[in-house]
Length: 279
Image (cartoon, rainbow, N blue to C red):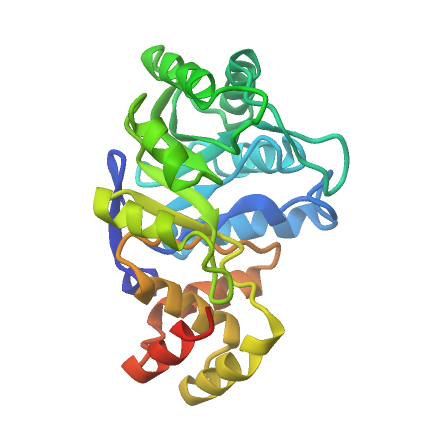
């Protein structure tokens, strides 16, 4: 099923375009352990069984919980599996996120991610969010040093504007950008088009959220395909751009399987146009 999502070359690996975001295998407020640890581990194992070969996480998810569960459950990893993580946010409490782009913090965060993920090198390490108190050049300079030390292979960024991306690529090659994007929120459309021009992967976070006014269109199209609105939203993302790499997350095996099945939903051109009009 997952092969129907298509493939994309991300760094040194060719991955399926539909991956898994591991933020939700944590507790409420993305804080602490998940309510059902066994189910969270089952989700991770099932993701690999279904052919998902791109898992995205961050040291701030939990904090540390998501990475720890991935390392405990899946290591040693199948050779085709790309584990990506992020650094640059600290967590004072549930649902609270504070940027920290200081080079010393990013280097320490990467070391912690390596330990928890049980990796000698992180294939894709992403700067989670620009810190208004720290120049982007300083933050990304720390990631360049980590790459030179062999601790990370490729650099990605998250929550960047086009102007910030232009500054970033002057410092180091960037292989992915992770910004909020879904059927209702197209605020990162300029970033998506920039990624297309550069051949860089665009990873949409919050991919299956939408405004209430989109419900009717999504449900109508879903009924025609015997699908769910969430599956239609994911199918639309896959049609939206060849560099789009959705990573829907969940703490449920059933929901995971439903998300993967979205790869087989083939939208008609008029349905795509109707969904395009929602943004």
